[in-house]
Every structure is written in structure tokens, then in C-alpha cells.
Length: 316
Ligand code: UDP
Ligand code: MG
Image 1 (cartoon, rainbow, N blue to C red):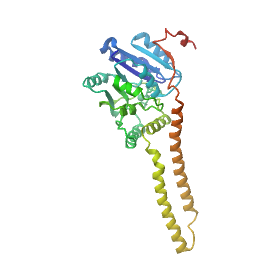
Image 2: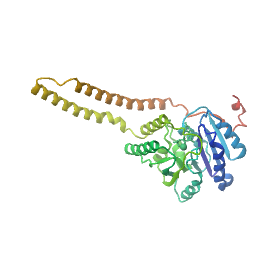
Image 3: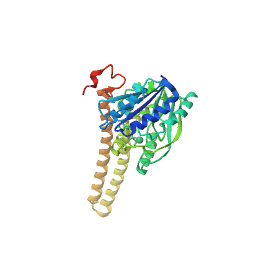
């Protein structure tokens, strides 16, 4: 098998048929030695039915249904583990990233690169808020982490077996796949493209998930936030020294202690900093806890390739 295309799908019933058609056209250039792996991340709509229907039209297509919603990065990992190709191409189901760029990516890989990632030169149809937060996120992440994670990239990339096996050997649960590929090393190169608006359906990354994703990325690739408490302790010592001088000065000059306003201000400022520090500790400890449980990342409920072998799995 030369090529595997991996796509995580959550509630993408509208996108699946056009996705399958477009991918099938793109990989036709590689004949029989290419496969498409669609992973249904526990969708609540008819995504799985659409995937099964697509496997009827295209024999190169394989559907895997996870037992529940495990999130984009774990669904992607499930597809990557199932992929059998020498080269693996990953993209989103909403066709924001043009599958046709695969041919250029293959060309670069022929020249010796192990990882060819797409870099978003422009993002059409995304809100100014999403663009701004993404811009800040990638820069903040790079400033904080020791790994050089290319700015404005997603999981849209072509990797070879060597790079994929390296990433799959990392057992962590808080998976930030693009960061893991950056960390893995190897010969990497970016290719610029214009990111189209979502073809159909709506985004599966509401603000709540985006924040969770950002915190996962930060904690997985940096321990700098843990040093925040130490830094803030210096700032608060400095602030207390100033307060002390101010209090002493008022006592001597005006014979009175300063009023409640400064006390309330100081208390609320420092309790805010303390809670924030505790919160940061909590984020890391919570992740440590989840990692030590060492549960499997996902369970496969159905797999169109092994459906004949395991008829019992189809029941229920
Ligand atoms: N996705 C998934 N599980 C999730 C959330 C998203 O498999 O819990 C998939 C989704 O179907 C899509 C890809 O991940 O193929 C990226 O999601 P989306 O396009 O909604 O994100 P955006 O482009 O808006 O950041
Ligand atoms: Mg999208």
C-alpha cells in the first residue's frame, strides 16, 4: 500500500458524499495502492450510514466507527493507527483543506522530505475572532514551548511511515498531533495554501473545545506556566515592599494608617494570583491523573473492513 488518506469525522453527514467523491478522484492517480480511512468519532447524526454507503461505491474506502466521541485528535490517531500506507495524508472532513494539494506534497516527499505540512496563507470564511485567537495561540505556544511548532498549520499534512511510527509510539492521551509531528523531528517542509471556508455543515470546534485544545497543547509542550507562581512571588514581594513604605510614610506624616481601599485591593489582587496559580497546578495534575490511568485511547465499535470477520460486532 503506497498511500493512506485519513479523515476524522464528527457529525459530517452532509460532507461525506462529496468528500468521498473528491478524495477518490485525487487518489485515482495512485491506482489500487491507495486507501481512504474515514473515522466516525461517535457522531449523533447519519455520518456512519453515509460512510457505509460510500464504501459501497468505493472499494478503497474503509470506515471505522469509534464507540463514542473521543475528540478530533484521538479520532485522527485511530485513523493513523489503522492506516497501512507507506505515506499517510491527513485532512478534515469539511474540505477546508484542498485534497488536490496532495500531488504537490507527494512531489516534495519524493525530494526527500519526511513530513510536508500545509501552512494556511489565508483563511477564508472564518470569523475575525477565530483568526485572531488562532494567531495569538500559535505565537504564544511557540514562545512558551521548547519545540518549534510551525505557525498557522493544522493537522493537514503528508507524512511517511517513519515519521508516523515515531508519533504513534508516543502513548500520551492529551494528543496535540501537529505538535507531536513537530517534536518528532525528521526533515520537514511547509507548503502554503489558501484555506477555504467549510463546504457544508458547521464547525465542530466551539469556543469551549478551542480553549480545551489550547490548554492541552500548552500543557503538553511546555512546563513554563508552572514557573508562573515563582515569577509572581517576586512581583508580589515587590508590591508588598512598596505598600509597606506607603503605610510607614502615612503613619509618620499623617499619624494614620491608610484606609480599607488599599487593603481590599491588595487582598483581591493576591487572591486572584493565588487562585490562578492553583488553577495552573490543577491543569497539570488533572492531566497527570488522566495519563496515569493509562486507559486505551479509543474503542472501535465497527470497522467496515473486518465486518465480515466479526459479525457479532454489528449487533446493537
Ligand atoms: N472532529 C472530530 N471530532 C471532534 C471534533 C471535530 O472528529 O470532536 C473532526 C471534524 O469532523 C472535522 C475535523 O475534526 O473533520 C475538524 O473540525 P472542524 O472543521 O469543525 O474544525 P475547524 O476547522 O472549524 O477548526
Ligand atoms: Mg474545519
